[in-house]
Image 1 (spheres, chains in turn blue, brown):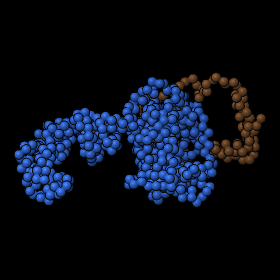
Image 2 (spheres, chains in turn green, purple):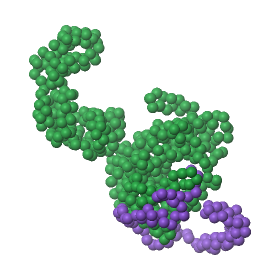
Image 3 (cartoon, helix red, strand yellow):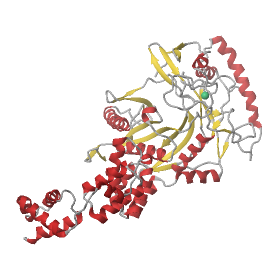
Image 4 (spheres, helix red, strand yellow):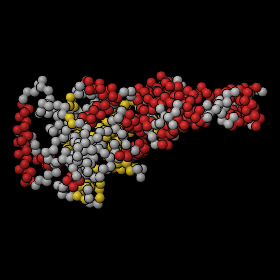
Length: 488
Length: 96
Ligand SMILES: [Zn+2]
């Protein structure tokens, strides 16, 4: 029995445990291909980014792209992989029209990244991470297959995870965390729609002591498809498990299935007639690479603070709730740095976090900008938060000042005076307004006095209206409470 | 000493997409077997305490910088192809 949480939050019980291992391919953010100088630009006309090397023409020799190697090393460091002192290249041999040389240059027994892990925050093991070249793109048209080799030779890092994920939701979170990390450290832009992040899932289930055969699901080209496909596949396997006693691990070879998003089902892919036999051997065209301890140290330094470390620090240093930490981290590494600076500038980390995850996030989304390009610096936002507290700006006033500061490079005080924002902090004026608001809303007053404390909110709104939005918020709160409690 | 049999040679031929007649298979099996036997003489060498070698050259760390160079024109890329459709190579339909 296994309890999982559905996307609606309620616990669902399934009579089986799902076992999931993901193979993730990320395309490295380089300007050129892995072994030749052809550009990696997405969306070029078919076969316009090819050369003798990536076409596999006789006599052409591959030479490794240094930047691709460095990015792969950085990724391996971020995934806490064991990094060997030497790594080498192997040929993976198979015949298919997407592979002009008849083999793919990959890494077999000495991958650049050995065992590692990713904390999501639960620790999920990584088996290995290796560099390889991508294959071309095929389009099937009637009795012909059309071949575009622009993608052939693109630099890929394949990250093989241990089968330690236990639910479709967790598989999706793992892939999201992986993509976020690779983006944060500048290894890949991880755009699924452009194929720079791809995922295959190995799925089987455990029922009591028995385990079903592993099915590999291909073509999972969105986070949602991954979650749906795994959930469907697990339930399909359970149904088959119940009616077919030969559907057990070891009795049936591993199969490859594809996800059909339109029908919402997994389907068996046509099996090639013989079992895969890649006859790996060391590529004589490429020399081995030595990895020095200094290079490993440099790669680790480039990685900086890992998400798992940031998560811990945000909670311990600022006392943020796990919810706030989650939302902030969901905005990426730049958001954490922005938050650190805004907090330092205003000294109120909880409020800074709220501003960033709500107002700032909304503006970035509306204007389709990133935080790097956002007009309002963290320091100026911190200044606004400090001024809001000091002067007692109402919520609406603070939002007006925020908008002004995005539009113009003003600091908080300049924006406040430019907008002519005034704050009524005179007690007698506020007492007057509170009394008028209470007289006009007898129901809210009696509700409050009957114990419905939330009624104070509507009264506060009425007071602010009386003061044309300019009442000093903390004074209004204080006076309103005094007046309400007075006749109790 | 025989290392390879006829079935293995037929399988290797299939993996290499070579279509061999039964007569060719009969002729090639002993030949390929002789080659493998010849290479196997290397196993007689005592390699205790010798590090495995991944490459025959005593060179490591050959890199190029991540600088684009001019690719071939589409017409050049397709020039030797037996089949094309528009800007693509075309081959007989391959299974998914
Ligand atoms: Zn090329």
